[in-house]
Image (cartoon, rainbow, N blue to C red):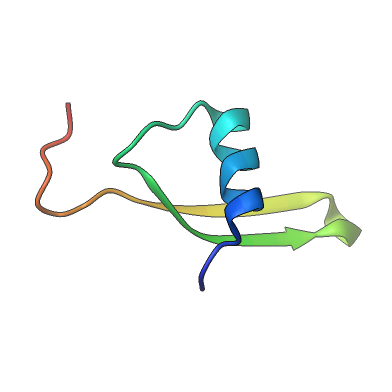
Length: 48
């Protein structure tokens, strides 16, 4: 899924995410008041 830029910015700010973290999916379930956010770290990058 391609995450719209506005949602990407919103959740990046909310979670304090910095590059190279990438948000790859957001699933909102209003009935259960749940937001699932899938993050990805590039395989070629070492985790600090």
